[in-house]
Image 1: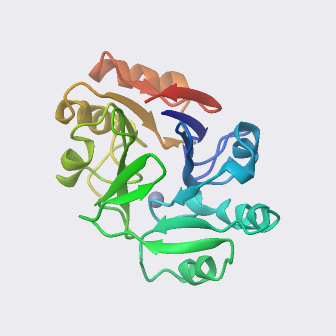
Image 2: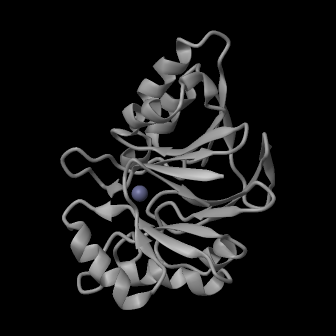
Length: 238
Ligand SMILES: [Zn+2]
C-alpha cells in the first residue's frame, strides 16, 4: 500500500501548496483521507475519479474538508458512483451541508468498530481537538498506516500507533512556541509517537504555513533519526 501526500499544510496553505489530504492506494482499492483545500486537483493527477472507492474525514475543520464539495461534483459526473464517506458525527453546521451531498453514503465512525473496504481494514481512535476528531489506523493485513488527524498529545494516540509501520502525525508547532493550550502537537511530540509503535517511521505533517521546511526538518532531526517531513505530491510506501 502506498500513500501520496496531496496536501500537508494547516490551517491554510503556503503558496502553491494544499492543506491536509492523503491518497491511500492499495492493490485494488483507493481511498482519500482528508480533503483539504487544493487536494482535489492533485488527487485527479494521481488517479481517475472513477477509481476512488471511499473517503475518510478525520474531523470537520475547513483545512481538512474544503475540497470534499467540488469532489462531490466530480463524483456526480460518474454515473451510479456513490462512495462511502466516513466522518465524525458532531454538531458543526457544516455537517448538515455535507449530509446534503448526494455523491456520498454518510457513515458516522465509532471507536471500537472495525470497518472494511476492499482489502483495507480500519478503525478509529478519538483524539483531542476543539471539535470531535478521530485518528485512523488502516491495514491491508501486512502493512499498517496510522494517521493522527489533528490532535493534542493524548493517551489514545498510543493505541492508534501501536502496530503501525508508518505514522502520519500532526506536528504543527515548533517546540519554542508550543504550549498546552494549542490544539496541535509540537513537532517533538509528533515524532515521539514512534516510541509506541515498535519501529514505525513518523511523517511529520500538518505543517504550519508560517514555517519553512528547513525549520521543521531541523527540529525533527533533534528528536529522531528516522522521522521525516511530509513532501507534497510524493508517494511513499507504507
Ligand atoms: Zn483541525
